[in-house]
Each structure stands twice: as structure tokens, then as C-alpha cells.
Length: 71
Image: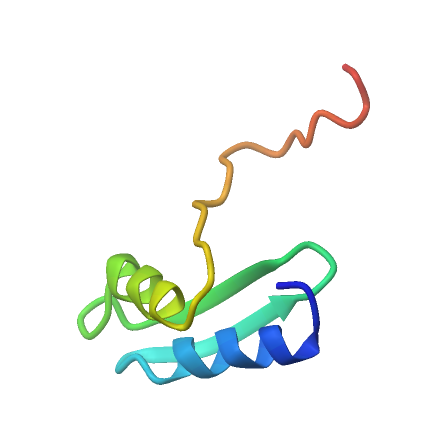
């Protein structure tokens, strides 16, 4: 997400998926945090919705280290 209009498009695509309860976007990092009812929606459905809106989806990295400290 490079600008506010892209963030709004991603949010709209995610909110359109049945079962999505919350969407929190961070424009600076290009990340979205989505709360959803797993009985009604899946991570695959969320990825498909974002991709259909024209955006690339990458899974979040596991672990807490960003590698920035060199440690």
C-alpha cells in the first residue's frame, strides 16, 4: 500500500468478505491486521479478496526479529 487510496481499497476489499470483523491497516509498513470469524471466512478468502483488488499479498513473517539491529 503506497498511499491512502490504496489503503482504502484494501480495507474495502477485506471488509467485503463475509465474516470479517475488524481491519487495521498501517500505511507506513503496508501491513493489514484482520480479525475474522474463522467459521465464516478463511485466510485464503482474505488473500483472494486483496489480490482481486489488484494488490500483492505476502504472509506475515513469523518471529519478532526484523533483523535491523544486526543481532
